[in-house]
Length: 587
Image (cartoon, rainbow, N blue to C red; front, side):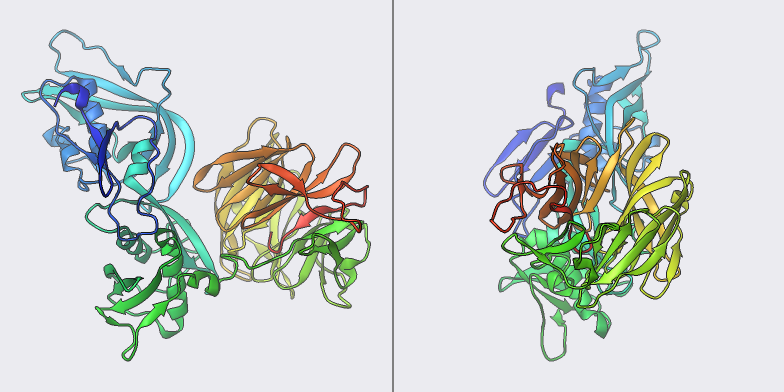
């Protein structure tokens, strides 16, 4: 093979193969395995050993391609590019650095040889780091310059690498071909809800995808969630195999779970394998090849995760909104219905409604010093739950606990929660010396998002809720929308347990998560607030004449459309007491 053909990626489907370059920009390849959990990988990189006549740059290019070879799990071919001494020291498993190249500059920067015939040189790979993947498989997005040096020495067999960074160095295209993006499902601290742990799993061409994913599930959650979630599987449980039989996926384990954890285990497996099976395959669990029970088999419905935790795929849930200070429920006909209790009466003393999952509404007083709660039942009265100097708008979690942040000054914040009986402080060391503008707990009860103001910059961070009651903390906060000069954040809203919508002060709508760079969705200068639930995204809007309306994002037309109808059926913007502040339960 000549220098021009240093490395190739081989895309193999059921009937054909084609050659595509590695190390360059990402190439979109249809996921042929979706809906078929036992199908083989669709993309492979064929690693080739170096040639004695290759230049230093060609050797580094070949090494990069060999690192991307999923067929060579031990990276034995990649080690052939290294000197004997360095081959024994290089650790490809420490981390994965993901990068892209600018295209406007040379791929490599080479140190000129000291003199003709010199036997040592250095080649530096240039570009942009876009993410890192740790040993747990957790994907950490982040932009930084790529300047990776490779030291090479020349020997009897040509140039070899004598020093290079540990771990794998993969282009974004290499990553797409070598790793599988997986949502692992675990249980919350109360064993009542499901929590998604998004990880990347290396593709093993000798195994099927379902087996690879279940093996990773049995290893447990990533480090970020380890203290916050549970797994139904007993420690030490191993996977024997995953097969198919009678249109169901059969998972064969070495051990059973505790009797009261069978439903939880079933939900974990169904949720984790749902995307691979396209939601259309049922499941069965066996132990050592035998039926789970002594007298019968254990079937698992394809949508078991939704039956275990309705918030995974919420049933028909209607939003609420304010009109003239009164809370209304938006029904099927898009006409507002007055809610029961005091919350349904006109009251200009409260704003920023938050709806619980159990028929209660919380609202912030206009002076920001009190959060009050009312039941949405006849006779439901307002009761003060949380008081402070300057409070954020309230947020409910799935356990019917109310959250808020007190800001005694511009450089201090204290997170508190109220369970209906008493108020508890929440340990959040990373937030104590900053100004928290907003806090929202996700519907899984484990992920939490905060808007933090430091100086003139505002940024959005996502962290983890650990513990319950009086021993609760927020840990591992990471920026998902970094500060950008004078950028301001107007509102945040959880779509689900892994995706957050962010509304900036420029009315730009972003979609953010802990495992991806934020994406811009739309801009509309009328938008003031947002709320979301699964596939529905609503916004409170105000036009130039202070007329108000609730808008819904139409994904097909990529436009905002008015939602609330008046008595005549019109959806035109109404005057100052028109629809505003939409809120989904636990939104």
